[in-house]
Amino acid sequence: MRISGIDIPDNKKILYSLTYIYGIGTTTSSIILKSANVSPDKRTNELTKDESARIQGIIEKNYKTEGDLRREVGENIKHLREVGAWRGTRHARKLPIHGRTKTNSRTLRGNVRKTMGSGKKPSAQKT
Image (cartoon, rainbow, N blue to C red; front, side, top):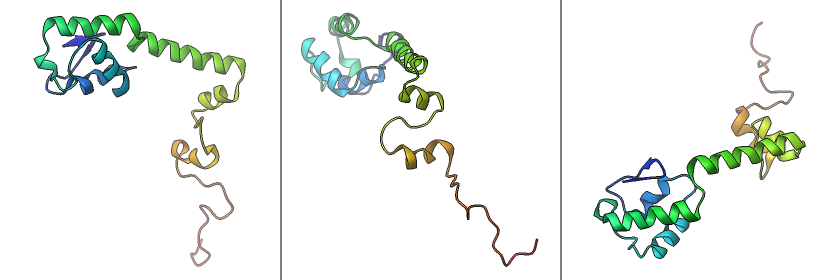
């Protein structure tokens, strides 16, 4: 099955296979299935054409997914950079934006510790 230009896996339950679409998680997927009157326990390959058409119609009408959503997120980040917001500068430097940014930035720049003793040879070695 194909929705929003994405191939959805056939052998999984429809509740989880809808999450392969960017912008749809499990909560949104369950809401979509309730409004389409489709059982979340059904496998994707068990769906009828009518059920898949209803699901696709609900997604296209009510939700922003894939390319449109990616474009909007990119524009939001670009706006933060242009304004000079703190979050925009963190995005530009590819550093963490939320949380304990002092210590968590090691994830992105590697385990580089900028202190006096780091990288120094032990005194017992000859130079």
